[in-house]
Length: 253
Ligand code: PXP
Image (cartoon, rainbow, N blue to C red; front, side, top):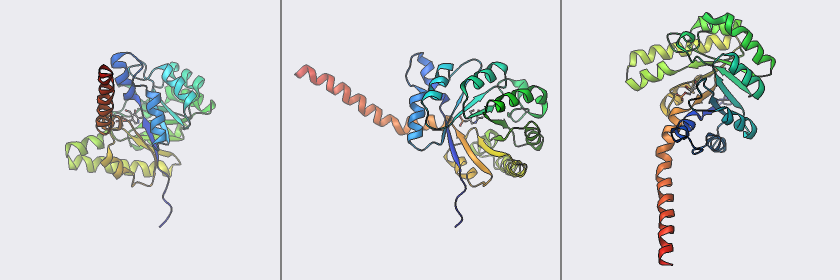
């Protein structure tokens, strides 16, 4: 059997911060989650510093950068503010994503072809800072070719439409989206790009897409954090029960 091609797992910890921010305190800490994910086998950590700071904060990014033993992939809008933060922080990679409607294609990826003029200097600035630039795009030839033209070494294929179709049981749409992903991944590899994929992946869709040899990295967040509730809740409730029992036992002593 030929040696397996590498396939990296980037764990997105944004939604640990979403839960923390629901209370405004420090718990649960996304940096602690990142450490745990690395211990468990993640190859890198992904965090999206949004313009409105709705989950990950600037302080989280600084702590991740300072404490991580594996690469940090900073997801960000292609704005001057975010490029400035990235250049100061120097994550391993920066994945440019759309945050506003005007920045995205109908499929939800970054409209690289439509925004060449705005993106070009920002991609160049990130690259000059030694940051590996990735563009989160729909698997459309026009977007892939624009990514190459702008000098991005990596694209991340938006898998959201495919994952939705799979979950909806819409076989025709799932097949159509799958073919688009396959064709896009082949085209991108042929043009020399490193190909990542992400958005909406769960165990089933991750297993399917892992069979595409062109894909080098998957970035997965929401499903993992949601699923961790179920795999971790029983243990946490038991620990709480034990703490309460220890406290009650003091009454007897
Ligand atoms: N990749 C990119 C570029 C993203 O913006 C996100 C978050 O939306 C993900 C991967 C992870 O997606 P999910 O949280 O649905 O797994």
